[in-house]
Amino acid sequence: MLLTRASEYALLSLDTIRKSDKPIGAEQLANELSIPKSFLAKILQSLAKEGILESRKGAHGGFVLAQKMDEITVRSVILAAEGKAPAVFDCSSYSHTCPNGAIGTCAISPFLANFQTRIDDFLNGLTLSDIL
Image (cartoon, rainbow, N blue to C red; front, side):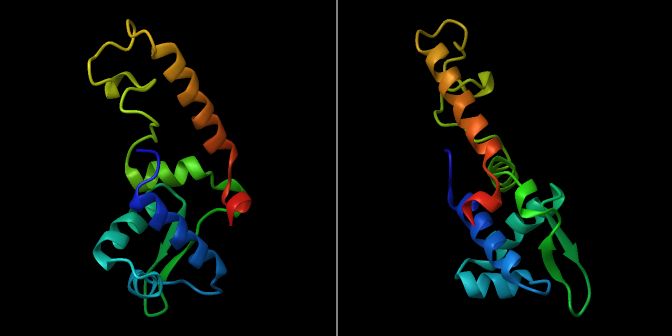
């Protein structure tokens, strides 16, 4: 699950928004990036709800970054866009995603938990400044 189109579109949108000297609306972003407007609007609202974007109203309204590029982690963008923590495997360190409910007794559970922790740490340490 690590990255779906929602995460990809969120990162592409943030890149376009950061380059603009004025707020950008969902329709303009959708047109520029060739993304379905309704899908993109939901992603942008999620990013705003999590404090990554700021939504400005009015004739010259739209979206702007609410934080500095080096304060926005890739993991926070993925979490906002996906609505859940990024998991590398269906069976992961998150007990609610273990398909068999055997997180404590699974032979590969320690490996998966360690791997997921490393991915989480990596994504928490990676900011928009690092990738854009």
